[in-house]
Length: 148
Image 1 (cartoon, rainbow, N blue to C red):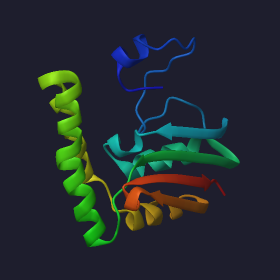
Image 2 (cartoon, rainbow, N blue to C red):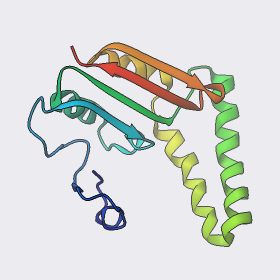
Image 3 (cartoon, rainbow, N blue to C red):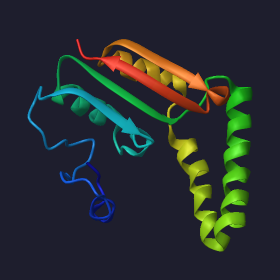
């Protein structure tokens, strides 16, 4: 599933669904599990998105995702911000020329995401057995949740 028709058209998968996290086009309680890779941060309404994921999971269904993290520690958050402000631009420029500068948009996304403690609280409000694992000083996260 993706919100972008262009992304779906480029996918080799046989079953493709156009949709957004906030309005999942599936019946209630139909999935044993749901996974997301580096996409939850793009939800326009995280609360609605988490509610929709919970809605489509069966009882005891599992939800896991990895994404950009933002540490609750101000010092760590500033280090991650400095990294995201510079390194993706440098790597992008070196590997793809001026077009690679678009990778700098990760910094803009970082400014908008909840910090990891706030995210854990948002997950705990909708799921049980929430686990939020931080890596890279908290700049990357892996979340695992179970629907009650």
